[in-house]
Image (cartoon, rainbow, N blue to C red; front, side):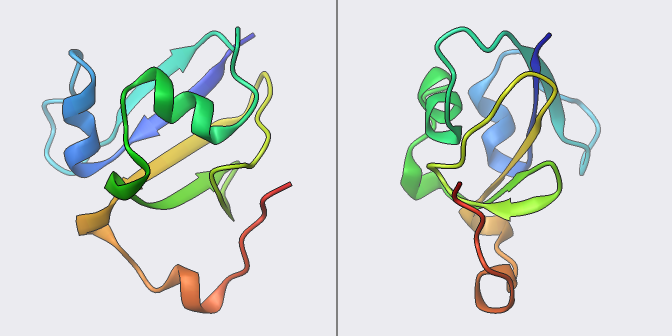
Length: 94
């Protein structure tokens, strides 16, 4: 099994196989070897915490310390694509 990672906006530049379609995310399936939390995925792609504004795991607003496992989908949005989620929805960090 693997973890599906969706990178949006400027974060797509972090991987060589960028999606050419404007507005479409880059979608990657990665092996979960050594991946326990969202922050491990970010480290794998050299994405700094300051570059990410919103994190979703399985469509739930989440944080850096959110655990991930086989079959999960993780979506990362850059700072320049910020939304109002942080004010209206609690983060699921567990």
